[in-house]
Length: 174
Image (cartoon, rainbow, N blue to C red; front, side, top):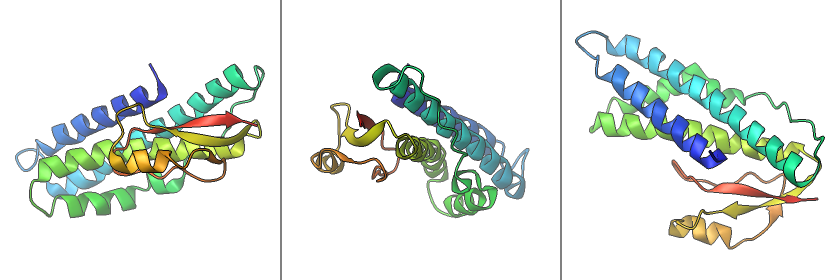
């Protein structure tokens, strides 16, 4: 399974878990109990996606630049695991219309974004990587196709994304 397939799977699994929890509101669960519980589910998935990204970069480095490369140990950015931030976002999401669709979108997009940020952090931290190119998997939206046209970018620049973007970074060896 590819890195992007793993992110997609984590995002879909997280969305299902949050929607399953939401289905218990209000009969079995209050909104006040739902919000922190759903935030914890998403935060855990964000951490998993971050770690999958680090592992994917380590595999790439070993296969392409340094067979004895040491995996990067970049701690998960606290932004992605902040229960307060996620609970605030969930509170906004459930205050509007079409709640289930919005919850699904948020719960799916969060781990995908965390994975992208983890991948960028690992690329930036590995000296055997000079830069990266956007991999659009051939089914890119117009925005991603435009971004891909920039070609190689320096390792320290994170990849621009949009909600639930499944493009990825293709490292370029130093």
